Each structure stands twice: as structure tokens, then as C-alpha cells.
Length: 157
Length: 152
Image: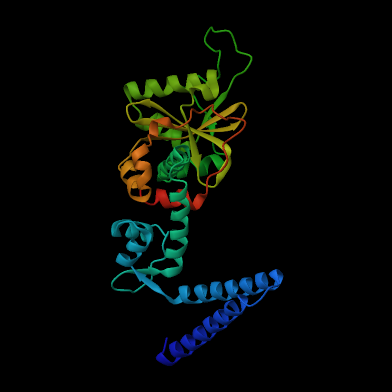
């Protein structure tokens, strides 16, 4: 992206923020609840769109992502390797997309909110371990053969 | 000997299960398993034919499939038979594998969900194969499972 393009995008972003701020600023002088809700919703939509636009173009270095997600850098690398976080190609130092960090952060927040539920965490861990075990080539091959109707009657000697 | 419950002098049971193997499971059964491991596997096949899910070990979850019933049963040392219950009468051994658990689930949980590490979770508490057989538990959020699985 050229400097000129970046400047244009920056100006457009500032204008959108200014619009949203203006809409929210007027809310305090309104009395009609329906109008207040309409304006707050419009401001929320503008901010969500800005967040999406900025997120698409922002990269996050591994160490920064680790701080945001409150996990270790090796964990961030593992998640990037497994496709949970989008690794940006050709970046040195390694970086992931802000959008993927944001999604993972929300997921982690939900997980942590349910963290006290021992049964839920147990099921989650069991499912993850099963998934890992069944992703091994022999299991994947066997499942594929079963799905394509290749199983035959078992016989002992 | 084809595997159906009630053979070899025993009274034929009213409910029997047909046990099948995929070519992958058959290969390991016939070419890899030796001695005691093979005998124990074949005993498991007989148990499955007679008892169905009662001989099925632990319930498994398979990514993207909340309809079929999957189970795993250890039969010798680290060897496990992986099963799918195709219908009310048919059990398919789709893989026979040596169990490997190189990762440390507690470490993963301690990092991602530190508050849970105080409570503790154990793999051994996985539900038995027959549990909720006709009423499976609600599916988990796959994105959360993937997140945890990526760390294992």
C-alpha cells in the first residue's frame, strides 16, 4: 500500500469516527427513546465497520499477540501453525492478522468465562484429545474406508 | 470363524451384533498384532459380538460427526480398537492403533484456562461407550475444540 493510499484511508477512517462521535454526542440532548436507540445502533454499526476495515489491514507480531491473548509466544506459534491464527506470509518477524487475533480473543474470553464449569472443560478436553487421536493417518484411513462401505465381517483364527 | 454372539456350543442370544473390520483394521489384525495382543483383540471381537456397546470401552467424539457413535477400547498394553456403531446390530472396527499421548493436557489447560488447573481434569473420566447411546450430549463449539486441540 502506498503512503498516499494509506493517508486517504486514514482520512476516511477519521471522518467515520467523527460521524460516530457526533451521533453519540447528540444522544444526551434527546428524549425520544426510539431515536436514542436508533442513533446508538447507527454509531455501533459505524464503529464495527471501522474495526473490520482496520482489522483487515493490521498485523500483529507474535509477542504482541501473546500479550493480547494472555498465552505464551509458543502457544501463539502453535495456533498459527494449526491455522487458528492467520499467519501473514513473508513477514519477519512472524506476524498474524489482527482479525484472527480478535476472533481468538473472543473465543478465549468465552472459554475462560465457562472455565469454572469442570464438566464443560472435561468434555472439551476429551473432544480435543479424541480429535487429535482420530486425525492420525491410520484412523483417518479407516474412517474413510468405513464411509465408503469397505468394511467386511471380522473373523478370528 | 465369523463373529456373532452365541456360537461354539453356547445358546444363541436373541440380540446379537455383527462385528466388521475395515481393510485398515484387518491389516493390523492379521499382519501386525502378534501373540497375546492378537488373542486379546480376538477376545474383544467376541465380547463385542455378544455385548455390543458394553464391551466398547470409552465414548469418542469425531470432528464434524454428531450422529454416529464412536468408541475406543483398550485391549492390550497401549493397543486400542476404534469402533463405530453403524446401526443397532453392526459394529465396525475402523482402526487398531497404539495409543500415543505425547502432549500434556494439564499443561495446555493450565495455560489457556488457569482457573481450571486448580480444579483439575482427568482423561480417565471420559464417558463409557454405552452412555447416552440414544440421547447423545449436545455438540460442543467446534472452534473451541479446535483451539484446545491445536495445543495438544
